[in-house]
Length: 126
Image (cartoon, rainbow, N blue to C red):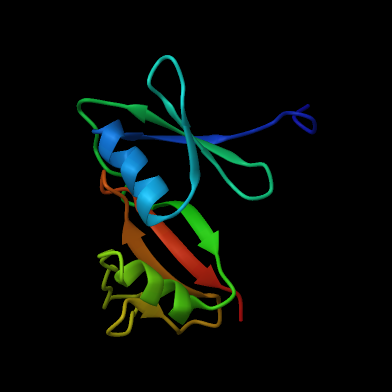
C-alpha cells in the first residue's frame, strides 16, 4: 500500500527562525521555508523532515533524527566547535565525558538537542 509513498517525518519547534538557523548554520543542511512558514529539511538520499511551528511546543523526549557519520569523534568535535552541547547519560545508557555512548555492542552514538530541545544524534556503525 505504501511502497510508492514518499514518506517523511515531522516534528514541532517553538521558534522556526531559530530552528532554521540551527539546521542551516550549525548542521549545514539545506532548509527551505514554504508559504505557510513550515521548514523542509532536505536530507541526503532524498529524505525530508518537516518542522512546523507550535506555540505550546514540548520537545520530544526521544531521538527524532539520526545522522550516520563515518567518524563520530570528528563529528562531535565539529559540532562542539559550534557550541553544540552533548547529552550526558549515566543510567542504563552510559556516555563518556564527550557524550558518546561506546557500550552495548550497537553503534557509537552521541545525542544533542536542536534549538527547540528536540533530541538528535550522530552515530557511527561499528
